[in-house]
Length: 300
Image (cartoon, rainbow, N blue to C red; front, side, top):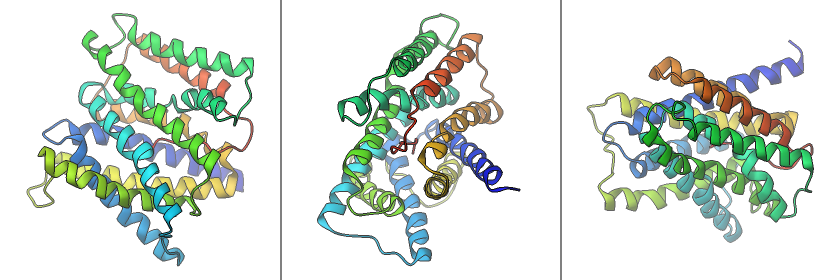
């Protein structure tokens, strides 16, 4: 197997892993568990896995004032706020729909990049934005698109996460990572996520006990958190080896596998409107994608 074929294989495996986290999260929040408790354990498990990766690399976690500020900020805009919205949306929407909407990260990232002066306006990118917008409209406008017409009210909730991920990628591209590498940054952000979500989980009664008995939501939560940590580490590795533009194509595989796993695991089915919306959104992403090596955020 040549090097490029190997990188493509890694890209596919990453998409399969990341796509699997959506139906697993759906399982985790479909019972009595709620977003703050789920976020605490996801942060804790991710921090443990990523701290182990740093230990294997012989690296320490920077604790400078600049690094700490970045840990807190990335924890908020890259995990706590977007995933709170996603977990809440998953309570009411099919996991496949949330996966499709998460793929809109580049659509949101482009106008934010214009505001940060990281990108120049091009008509082809505007066409991409319009394709993404029409894709979302196709999801919500026809009565036959969603399984339940009442679900349309939760579509804006599901759009919060890709908007924040688009902001996160542009923020990192504009201001850097506070003197940390990507794994250190995510590890530090995960640790900050623990401190942010633990008091909230206790105060709201959403604490999830680590003691048995365990059920499907517990196993889904642990699996989703471990997969996220390992796949994100693989993403960072691929960016370093193949470049950010190549690695950013994982968005396509994440969406495709997210829909596939939702159909396979959760038995979801979709109307022709939803498949057409997916096609429009994928076309929009293709047109909006940066041609340079700017940092691209990926759903975390």
